[in-house]
Length: 274
Image 1 (tube, rainbow, N blue to C red):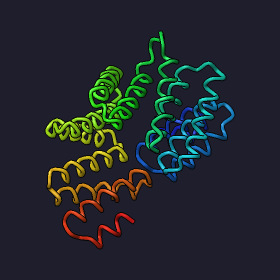
Image 2: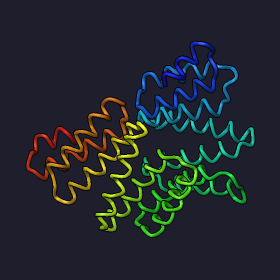
Image 3: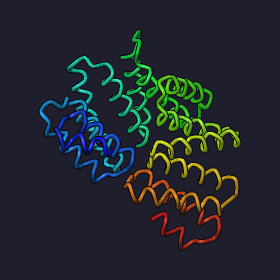
Image 4: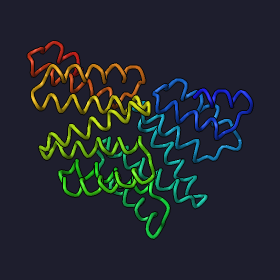
């Protein structure tokens, strides 16, 4: 981040601004990210796809799904106009993930299938294919098709390891852990969650760190260790309140409410769930 700040004092280049926005997004520094994206949008040389897609990621992290979907759709339109296959797949995968998060599984499936259609007979798109496989794994998991979910997530993990994308590798490990937990393979699930947490702390992914803590808290609660669950969830909540990821913060509050009910702290549960 210091490197980009120093470079931008010399010249205002769109690619440096884009890279700075990416770092701020990972760190969860939303106000600075928004300000940087405003500057990026003012650069006449900045490709529309690069601008719109990053705004989509920003709005999604803030829980503003209509604005996020509008921005990513604009990114998709820009990619199609330039016959940019990579941009098309990235946009479709992101639209699929947002649809999944909002419970629209039919729309998510359609977006992912469109992305796979774009990738048919194409080589050199390992990262993009991994994103699609990851999303499909989540979709199958949500629908209770754990074998299919495991296959898609294993394929995504292998692709991320091939490209050396540690942040996405951690995200995929988390999803695999979720499948393992639903299959009652608790040791495998906890191992995957802890590997992901270590990686996310290493790369400075604050939002991802919080998501890992949330999953570990859910696992601890399910295994009856309510004190450990509360500790992990408060750690997750502290991060979410700092980076303003509204979607994940709501999940943490909901899980805390469940823990409080299980230990008989009903007033605290009501406050958390409201």
